Image (cartoon, rainbow, N blue to C red):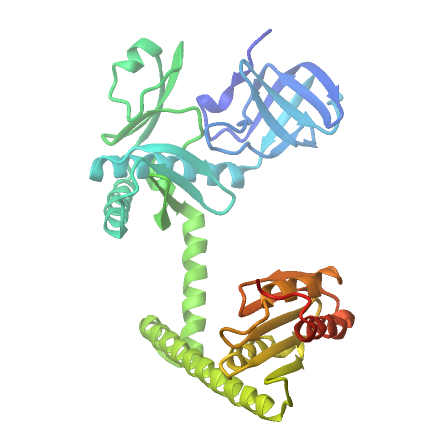
Length: 403
């Protein structure tokens, strides 16, 4: 089976080409077209495939099948000779990101000995995974500074081939297990790697290399970055967001972080104050309910239903009622689904967990808890009163008692 000549191996800037159709294989997803030569890069090594047209038809996918590259089209071409056209904007973007990755990976290795174990070129940003989870902001900035210095110096990027044995003796950033001819990408006096991807011919064409964020994960550090036009778009988005935040605060952009921190603290303090106020109101409401409830056989059974918006208050009221002597609280909350909170004074004779579980199970709900406080839900709002009726019968009738 003949090999597909990979034109992008030697000329990453080739935008159009002509090729001879060797064969066409039809399938459920379209036709696989095999050519004697191609400039389309197939997905490989963390880099997505090229887009474009072949014989006037959109290229659906380029597949690396070892010795050959399959071009997936909606149907086979009408001629034995076809013209291919690369989606250049996408290709050049990938060239910027992939070459930028080589520079950034080389910079991390030179500044801290951190090795790149994987690379992914995404639609909006790219990532590399480094072999340590001990990197922080200082390490990010050191590598970013060095990587951009290489860009600013516009160092040359050279692609050449060597036999595997000879390549193995070179100072490769990462050893290669490839056999035969090995394709090497060299960034002048900085990095040498075995790679089959597409690259710019000078580092200046990468544009700015910007680390966006990093996170630790399972012994590694994942670094997200953007290069070139992506970095420009990201900078514009950042400026737009910061400008809008400054406008909302009626302040200068340099004051935004401090103002956000201050507002966050005020919000947290406000939330704590509201929570304390809600607890106090719940205690007052519980006391009012307790005083109004009749006493039967030395205890008070208080039954109350809240609206769906009052769920948080309902739970607080149930807890507050349990602080009163000889009290059982059966609290329901309307909604879809409805909810229940049952409580009793410490040392009460009922098991609220068992009572709640039995009360909601009849209506398709679930719940439970310890002796003195239980909660549940999952039943229809229409069944809420019936569930409370059953619970009250169990409490007063003693059908479900603690043993």
